[in-house]
Image (cartoon, rainbow, N blue to C red; front, side):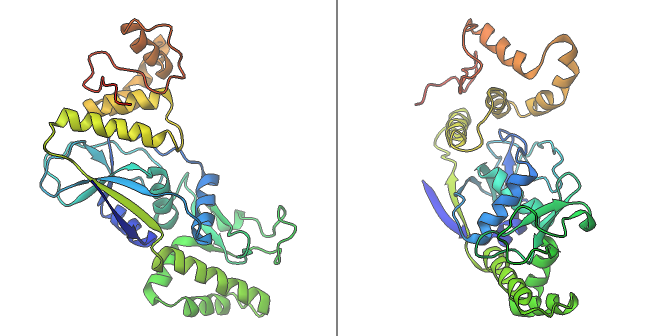
Length: 315
């Protein structure tokens, strides 16, 4: 049975930092590009829906069903680790990884060496503008794309610094006033934009319960193999509606769910065999050949593994 809990974005980011939210080995890597991440922050500040998060709840001291890895803070790959007993209550994210990674990287980390900036002159009634960059001087000074923009200039502010200052003061008016003063802004329209944008950022990251998390407990009346089957199948179905799993990603999730050490083979060792033709696509073709299913299309959303404990036909 699933239970729902509402979270503030800043609280989830903190719990990701503490490894309370983790990624089971069946999860693929970060696939979102910078542009998609920037748009998610616009969606967040507008107060629009961006879907719920689903996690598997595992108790402290239990041996988890899947080994896991922490979220990446800089976009780099982190290998999963073997865990015999959980150090704390933990949530294994099976749907919503890309969104949670985006919030974590944008508010506490970086991607491709770039950190997230927020334009405090954004037209708060239409679009909140965010951009990843490794040097503030490289950010555009004036808007060229939006001709209807009220203020043509940009006023970029580091998102992580804004979050920290808002947390320290718990006062969006004070922070907006500090920024206006530090930038020597005298124009009333520009002042209003800073105030409105700081307020929207404060509300939707620190005070509003913007994230809905559905927590599912492992049914220990089933054996581990059955539970793994059920969760891998749930993972596949959930991802049918999001950023689609490639055939390789799907096969990888099944293999890693059965034997967590497959993660290193699939992501690192496999590269050493590309010269002899063992690519990701050829690995999937080989699996079909072993099943005597050589005529199946690569676009199949669910290849069935030979002799796999996940060879199940739940529909």
